[in-house]
Length: 108
Length: 417
Image (cartoon, rainbow over all chains, first blue to last red; front, side, top):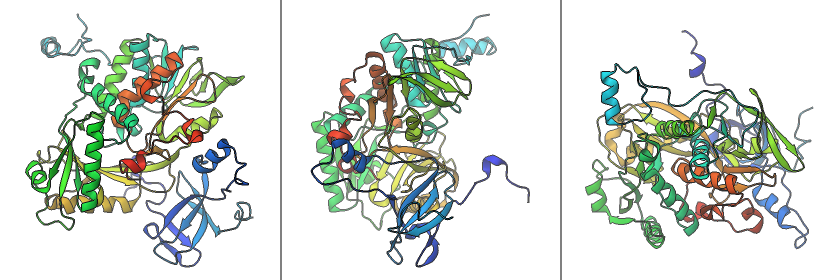
């Protein structure tokens, strides 16, 4: 079969295959994305400026590159974990535990 | 030999007799100049409308529209072309109603047939709570001075033939906005481009902004792959790419980018003469003038800059269509695509100034930017020309995220994300 012309070729997966730390690789529809990881709530309460609070609530990195995000295996083990995923190719580079820092979640 | 610059029935006849030799390109292809009075980044509907209204309403004609690819190749060419103003809060309702009214006169204003067909726009209610939401929505629209009609299930079936006789989710009623409808998306882009070009605006395609020139908190221009362009005023209308480009200007924006998918079926004879939205079954359906069923899906709820969309929504959207219209189960998909939409927390757009002096944004349209093109361009042009927000968008500024004065249409009109 002849290869498709570039315009018709789909680069990367057309659906996410997410490697749940508990259940192994499962289809995208079993999961819910919980948004950007490693966001810390500012404090102490009462001393947070409006700017810092707006930043915490509404402003996200939204990168056109690798993104650290939380996923929930809603239709599986119901566990949460972190994923590093490219927002252009959708390729998942690694999966790491909740509670790990971004640097801890980066392979050597 | 004469040249035809104005489109009309008479010019069609004349050019027919002239063997079609008098037609000229609808817009120019100039080289970028070193300096303009204003730059608009993004050659989609909003960017081109901004340039057109800068020239028409404010007399600022020394303007460049810089487009990375080709005009209308982004979300303006990737939506489901529905125009409506069924919003809830007074601010958003007034803004989108103004946009709808501009659309009503746009073909004449631009001398370009945008094929706006006001065929009505129905939202269906499938349960008691759905009907309560529709009643609330219709009342809000009427209070905002926008016509809306609430109908029972029998009236819905009378207006929309072909609905499933025995659906899993019964059709208890529907709300119609009779002046809603659809327009030809390419024609909106081409019409604005042609009209802007005629007023002296430079439309520069294949021109990607790589960097902003800034000094003492003021914008001075942009660097592009086609050279450096200076201007004291820069407007940006780049939808899903707003955060990425804004970052280059040192401006952070409270926007997340998601892929929104749509499909068309193979073309068939006219069979659906209105627009249908059924939130409960995930169906957004109309028929184009070419005969294709145009089907809108929902967002893939994870960040994406890939313009393709994911498979689960394709299945869900198809299931919704077949549930409402069993006869359409025989149709085949013809094309599928996705656009990268710019979602704000409250689903209300952001139009106005930024912390960088002279740099203005038009973004945050989420899944509903097409219907807002004329008003979005009108209001961005206003703030770029005068430095003051247009009254319609006075509350659409970036400051609302710090003050907390959100206009939460996400919850109020049940925008599906």
